[in-house]
Image (tube, rainbow, N blue to C red):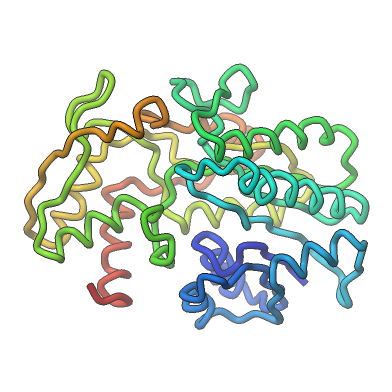
Length: 318
């Protein structure tokens, strides 16, 4: 059995579909369905069982052994809002929960593959898995960094696989429930199809209007990395998951406009509340990932965004 926490979420549900494509259906989904809309992400997934996140945590804390052997745990459940400033809530969800689950896996030698974030790097310009490059700008990024630091202290003693994956800007199917935290591509499409101009931020820092650059990665590529580690259980560590290529928000906007053949692009003032808390540039250093043997390519914005638009056209109504 494979356990996927956050399995009804964006990356989690895409991972389950990828596992299903490999014939794996003995999957326990762990999630919080207080936001009931997320059930839609699981409708076309083949799973064995579902457990609420609090019930699952209680089971883990009491040392419960599951009826079937656990092949691996993918820990994707977290509060992913970069604008959430309730530090107590964030730490309970992203740090304490993760620490409890890791210790459970280490004791039972269960492979543990979890989601970290590029938010750990903050406003730096070097995105390498190195403490010297890490300076988060918000409590979300700090919660992820603190757990990465905890993992680092235990890696040398681990007798089973432990992998942290630092996701950059992931986009793709099954993210509608994320609302304001959905990818920029999703928001721009909604604006265009609502008859509105596509809106991007005006210049910030040393960047011109819409020229802020992020490493945008297709969720299918992100899941492919996860499956590779599942099949290479001798590889452990913390790794970036991006394309290794910084592309502008203008490029994302034009990929959306080109797909639909029309659209107006405009720029709005940079929000005051994001000053000092916004990453204007990210680009994954993939050296560590490539060194452990992952060789697959990653799609560019020009390749991935049109495919995502097609999926949205077939699966959503504006």
